[in-house]
Image (tube, rainbow, N blue to C red; front, side, top):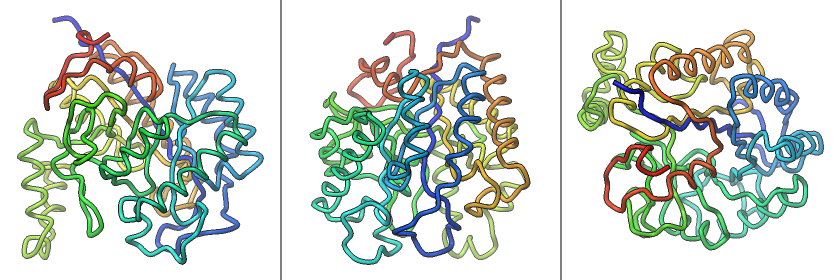
Amino acid sequence: MPKQDVLFVLTIDTEEEWLWDDEFPQHDCSVKNVAKLPEFQTFCTSLGIRPTYFVDYAIANDANGCEILSQFAKNNAAEIGAHLHPWCNPPYFGKTTEAESHVINLPIEQVEQKLDALTDIIYHNIGVHPQSFRSGRWGINGKTLSLLASKGYKVDSSVYPFYKNDFFSCLGAPGYPYFPSFKNALAPSNQRSLLELPVSAGFNIKNFELGENIHDTLSQPPFSWVKSIGVLWHSRLLRKIYLSPELTKSEDMATLVDQCLAKQHPVVHMYLHSSSLIDGATGLLNVEDAFTRICKRIENLVSHLETKANVRFCTISEAKVLLSNLPTKDSVIKLKEVC
């Protein structure tokens, strides 16, 4: 049987570093991680990857970071997108609460002002009009999608499949690229101005919908009291997996990719945070030499994927062009039908 065609997209939330359990930083943000970007870009280039860097205000306001990223863009080695962190992105409207750290919970007027400020500083300091966007801490709604489209953005990647918390939910959203409704961000529609391209996520079982239902049920009391999710994970009966080298070991990422290919997903979409490229910056990946660990996991995943599929590496906006003929209904389409 011939290999199927698949796009590989790598996106990096390019942002300040701080311990995520601390208060949200507003001014004088630390961006030491930008020093690792040239080495990381060289690594990506060695594999044929052309990453997309979602840049937030703190990075776009840093001279060193802007010089590095503008060179990537000039060399056509990567794409520069926008990443909105409400807490460090002017204008400010008071101290950022946990709920307000999610763009989805802000008044649309505030989102527009912050988005304009972010778009402008990326253009003036990096020299790029960003066409792709990801919200800080995930989550998106129809009003924000409509705003993005009106500002010339072509791709959003704020949907975090199979996830919910007290402040937003992405449960029920497609786990593959779709053109979202501006009334319901988690549902496909007929509009063609803005593509939603979620990160790859799923379970180590074939039926993702069943996995989602089981995981959601067991995450709530009384099942959560006995840590049912942990029991299922360690027994390998059910694992929720995100395609991120910060969160997931190579073996589990390979399992997820196999499931996605079996479902004929046209895109494999990996993500990470630039802050994880330095040790001990966020509390997410507490290992020595995190940079090497991340790169090795990416290399292992790409090697595995290339044994299973014909891989085309592209940025996220390039993926939008290649997928512009996706069907209007909630269905998956093979890449060979749209290229």
